[in-house]
Amino acid sequence: MRTRPLQCLPRADHVTRPPLRLGVNVDHVATFRNARAGRNPDPVRAALVADRGGRRRLTAHLREDRRHIRDEDMARLKAEIQSR
Image (cartoon, rainbow, N blue to C red; front, top):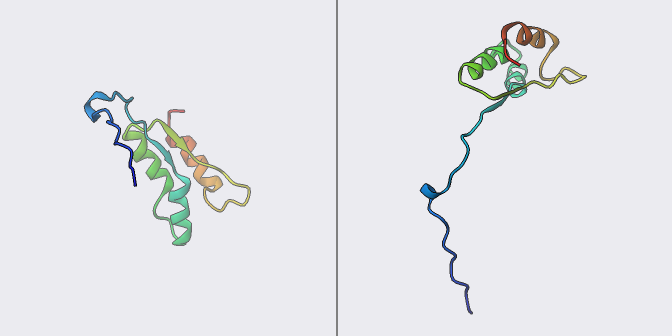
């Protein structure tokens, strides 16, 4: 059986990549909170930590059935997160 020779890949130090940009979806934090039937973990606190950590994008999907993020979470997010 004949095999093809391996192609040489560029070394990692020769590859220029843009810096990673963090996007945080706080729906997942709210899903854990709701599964535990409590108040923790708090999706708004998670959003604040991500904001301080330099996140680029913050996502919260308010679904019609409110199974993840709730109306009060959205109001708190709007009040406490000053950036877009």
